[in-house]
Length: 353
Image (cartoon, rainbow, N blue to C red; front, side, top):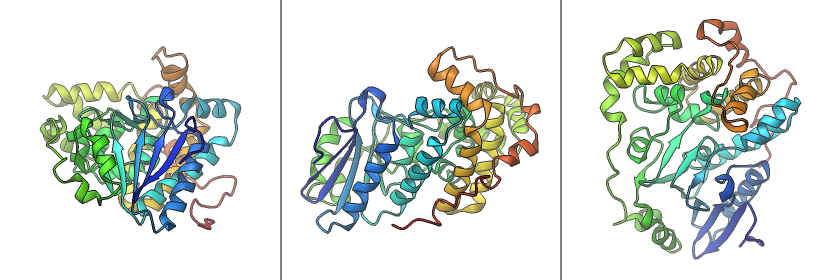
């Protein structure tokens, strides 16, 4: 067990299960670089430990699994022109790949808020559980960033154009829609999670889940597939917005209005990243792409401005640059996908584990 209950990552073993708890409840368990390293170290040990059959991941407190990365630290780094965020992302994205390739059942309790980096430590797992309290989102376009932590890989694989809708709007979805989009596997009522966690100490996930799963409360996206799949086709954000505004369904028009509040640069880069992720297929090449995109975003004015408006000052009035979609050129988008200027090796080319 972790030596100190105040540790930001708690670790314990009971029976045949290893339990990992993100433990920054006052910050909604937002990930820091030391947390990422601690999670990775624990998984390294547990994957080799023959006494551990299953890993269970959850978040401390009542609000959620994880609200993402420590965005205030990233903002400060971007303002200072630092490199700490690049080091953080390098280790975080490697962790996402480790989770996806983990050789034992990795059970993630996606209860409550699960955003950004929280999706990265859960939705790549092999057994992903949502509850009636789940709110899952990749909200990056609203802060001048682009979906990362393998988010473009996950959303590119969602049925039809559901992933494009979620990526551009950044809107959260509940349990049923997370299941529909392939971000989760099972619905379990929140009140049942403690008993499920205890059962996993002695039983396989399939055995522990037997009799505990249920039908999720009805979602919204299934009823919107007709306009989502039509309106979000193609590689032009402008055309997507025009189709949404022209569609007769009020929900389509509302989606367009939401998109138009997001960073124009982030929208265009996000759409390009999604389409390229579809072509790349496997997770690791997509993470490599996301690392290049994130490095470019760190130096963009919209990330600093978006975090200022949404998190620091909370005036909710970001001043994007450029302010309109028409001001974002193809060349500007392409720069986000260029090789890193400092000659850094790829995420996985110099890995020794």
